[in-house]
Amino acid sequence: MRVLVTGATGFVGSRLVPALRAAGHDVTVLVRDAAGDDAPDDVRVVEGDLLEPGSFDAALDSEADGLGVDAAYYLVHSMRAGGEFEERDRRAAENFAAAATDAGVDRVVYLGGLGEERDRLSEHLRSRREVERILGDGGYALTTLRAAILIGAGSASFEMIEQLSTRLPVMVTPRWVETKCQPIFVDDAIEYLVGVLGVPETAGETYEIGGPDVLTYREILTRVGTRRGHRPVVVPVPVLSPKLSSLWVGLVTDVPASVARPLIEGLKNPVVVQDHRIESLVDVDRTPFDEAVDRALRTGPDGGDADGAAVADGGLVADRHPDSNRAGREDTRGPNR
Image 1 (tube, rainbow, N blue to C red):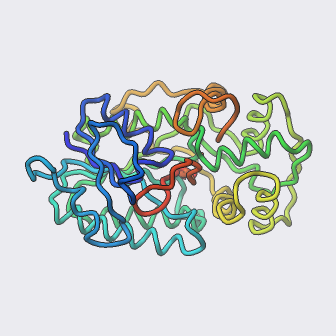
Image 2: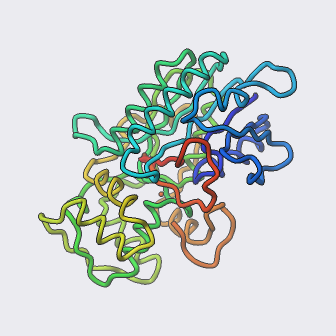
């Protein structure tokens, strides 16, 4: 199958591309600067920007025979681009949906974020849901996978958790530490993303994916700290706002406050799988949380071995991948945070 991957240099996309190649697909990637891309020889690289209509049309056409692509993965979000990320997300999704429809793409796969809309979603999760609705209006079959935190090296959410859990002996946190979350190992999410393409009945459907463990954020912080040989004391307080929390996180970790704030605001929403239909359609041996953390701490942002720890998106995830050469802006997270 001919497949286009947007956000191909990001946290999820950089892992998805080799997985698609291994599954036998012909892969095209959309990047903002083709000269700076180091994709394998058998991956077609097209330069374009989802925020500029017409600049990426070539990515949807086959270079060899003009037949176009059969399917596309939408893995772009602009949270790290500044305070107007919702507007950027909206524009990029509208541009992509229109172009994919005009090009006759059959299927689009989107990685979105878990969270019930009745729970008053954060700006970050609300934006992911808006993108999902925009993509759903296109003239193709949209498959959406909704996820919570993705555990893996290269994700801002996991980096934030890992650094908070090891750099402070006592952690004063907002009340969100008691919120429940169902994180998933990034490699398992990749298996689901690749797997739905081979199951025709998943076309036009929305599914929820998660790991085998449901934990509070307090449990996540303490268990990650324990894996690193440091068990923090977590003290929740009722008066710590997301803005103050993000400034605090920006001082203690390597995650900028501008990225930390939408992530922290999203932590108030429970993100637990309610719909388990995907498990009967795509067979994934889901990785337990502690094992996922251990594997994340052993790998670098590109999935290779690393000497130390690295870092999650909805679900959804802000990207800490070192390469900023991506079409649109940041890759998701699940909330995939």
